[in-house]
Amino acid sequence: MKVLVLAVVLLCVCSLEGAVVKRNAETPSLSDVFTQYFQTVSEYLSKHLPEKAKTEELKTQARAYLEQANEQLSPIAKRLHTELVELITQLVETGKKAVQK
Image: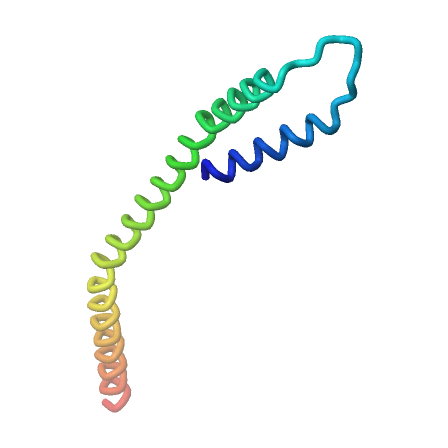
């Protein structure tokens, strides 16, 4: 990550030096450009990285909660399904007996 940022900084600085038109007015020095760029990058990272980390943490917590709920509810759902099938079977049998009488 640091290498990538450094490469981007160097590319930006090189392109800035090539694109700058020399004027009579005083131009900022290379160290000023670096300082401003690093301040901008550090401000951006300090604002946006904690938000992304918090988002990932929430995703992890939600995933863990869903897995836990699935583990707890699966046996209950299977038992409920089995008992419902048995109830319907008993009702059908009772209905058949009532029709035969």
